[in-house]
Length: 387
Ligand code: FAD
Ligand code: UDP
Picture 1 (cartoon, rainbow, N blue to C red):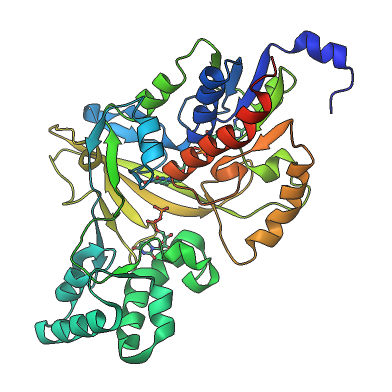
Picture 2 (cartoon, rainbow, N blue to C red; picture 1 turned 45 degrees about the horizontal axis):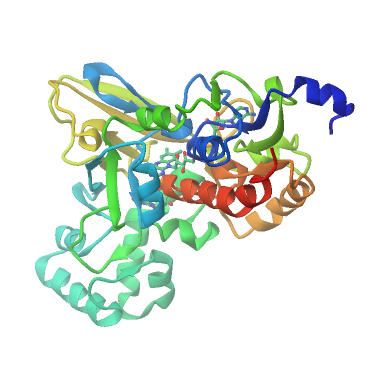
């Protein structure tokens, strides 16, 4: 804590310091600057805006997502209309194929995947069985389907082995059943012919990209953005802090390092118009990488060449790699508990939020929703009259 309060008042130039300029930090900076009319210093230790959603123009002018493919999708009308203040949208429904047994089949695994991998009579029998058991147009998590066993047990084992087991081992170095069931349930088996990766109401890409969206979001006279700036460099320059970096790092790993997974991205450029038929091809069983994404499909750009990215999962080493994914397992709550208690002790001065601050496997829309809720429920009511 601060020692001399007079020294603090003298140095304090900002009302709020926000650490991390990803979705969580940028939304909170915008809300506090315009909704509360307070001065905000937004910092990021990276040399750019946007956190993991940052994009930039690369070869052939194609917009590259620096930290892997980011596809926007949400069921929240509130998040959609909030973000729509800062960007126009390009409608885009993401499609993924999986390389399985020498074929490219829809992922999530659906009735078309079944038709592609089984002889017609067997595919028809399994389709009837799936519909009779679960109903048409239903989505069933693979772990649930396996648990149920019965006449579909063999098919469930097949899908588990061909789609989930090895991909998950590569991505997390864990088996699907050792993670929270919600992780593999993000990509359920679909008893339908809906070949879209997501089924959300709103699916689109920011027309000029994410970085342009962020630039508009923070273009407010109350916001100062400092890139390549760590929290430690500015601590003390503001009275209140929102921290969206890793919560364990904030507390100097006092209660043990929380597990994260990292990634290495390999960009490749090709002198062809199109490298693959859809935005992403997953490789559950071959190669050290999990998937290849071709950005053009996401951005809708046209060019003589194209750019792809391969994602190679890695163990995370604090200080050496980026903590891209919290690792949700049944033991997570227990590991997180002492950090949440330490965070509670700072209530009223420091708030933690975001994928790293909450240590939660948020999508972009969930990070926005969390930031909006934090502002509306905790920040606005407490600081509205405090000027
Ligand atoms: P972040 O974007 O991680 O921002 C936190 C920022 O804090 C970072 O920029 C970091 O540099 C900074 N920081 C940390 N510590 C400090 C410090 N001490 N001082 C200064 N700065 C600090 N979501 C989707 O909805 N759709 C997708 O298709 C999708 N694809 C993804 C693909 C990959 C490979 C990954 C890793 C994530 C994907 N996501 C996707 C999730 C999305 O990236 C997150 O939901 C979102 O970025 C979370 O925003 P955030 O602000 O909480 O965190
Ligand atoms: N998954 C899988 N095979 C696939 C696609 C996904 O096993 O072909 C599992 C894997 O465990 C993965 C999780 O489902 O980590 C969630 O997939 P998603 O595509 O949502 O992951 P993200 O885009 O967040 O990396």
